[in-house]
Length: 469
Image 1 (cartoon, helix red, strand yellow):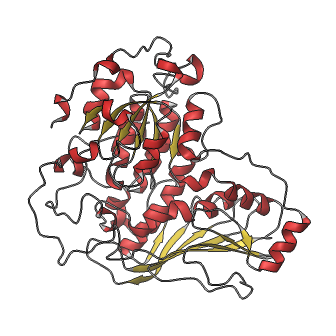
Image 2 (tube, rainbow, N blue to C red; image 1 turned 180 degrees about the horizontal axis):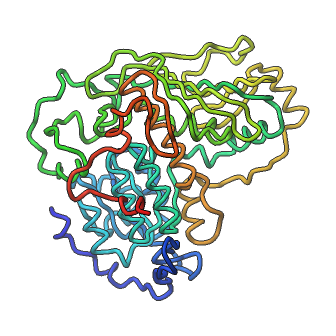
Image 3 (cartoon, rainbow, N blue to C red; image 1 turned 180 degrees about the vertical axis):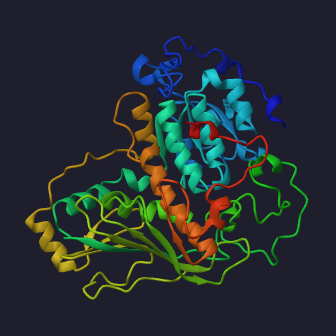
């Protein structure tokens, strides 16, 4: 089945677009381009609903998007693996009637006028291309974490948001939970005092379980490509290493060419809290303090990565450390909640240390009795508005003008992703990386330039125009 041969179902061809605003013209050089269709300003399409498209329909994470689309019009789905186009039909009956494609570019060419917003749930190495293609066509976009595969891509998506003016969000659900807001309120109220150190940890990669698989030899031997998989489309911007089943459909995350390892998988959940509440956006130094079992072309078995941040407004300098693969920070002496969790963050303040869980929620003082007394005395008042329904619901409300801009919009999530990608860079190459954030370069490690901005295959160039003066 080829993308170009799949016709739009008749039901979709009849959807009226009369109530949507057309794309605004540029008012001048550098002016913001509004979305082609603005639900927020002009009502909605058929039945007052958004017309959604999904790019990437395999894997478990996409289930939330498919269920979240049930209240809207799911008009198109796209996946490079034909078998994935119908596997979740039980979650949303619109899967059966949605137009189906393998190539998101063909989908957007054919159905651009009938699509308002796009959800991107592909492997890390194609997040950027799919997201950029949708944004430059005026589509609102929700992209799964990590937002991009490298640092230049993250910075470019921030520029794209400014230019195209669409509603954006990243799918790190913890950013919609109340716990991260409570943590910020505690910090603002001085509960922790000055925070100069945060330790965050995660147990993976857990080789041999789930997505974490190692080949017997590296590179893996080439295998016949399954008939349902369009391998060149799966690769997208990345050079072909030869197909092997260990790459696709789900084990790509541990391979540096396609994924960003355990740090890419969970940093945007666990470290969302530290980065957002403490404003940890522009490190001056990133250093791999420990690398366990380096694997050719793959993420390490474990690591300890350190980011150094200078003082920010009224906040002192701060060190953020990431531990994975069984490495863990020292348990605080006053910890009294039983066994130490296998993932989360310790904010080590001058007055109190607080634990934040694996999705940056459920903050608690490390001493159980002190936490009970703290709650009894009265928590700091609510200062930051709470969000209902998760990142997709938040995003849809914003598009329709029924809520504020999502919290993990690309202005924020691109910064969070940059910090994560810098950590992945340190995991990959080790040592000390001095960082010039303004110019996206490492003064002491010029050899890292091709990994800060990775080369892409011909036809997959996106975003270069956004960097022109």
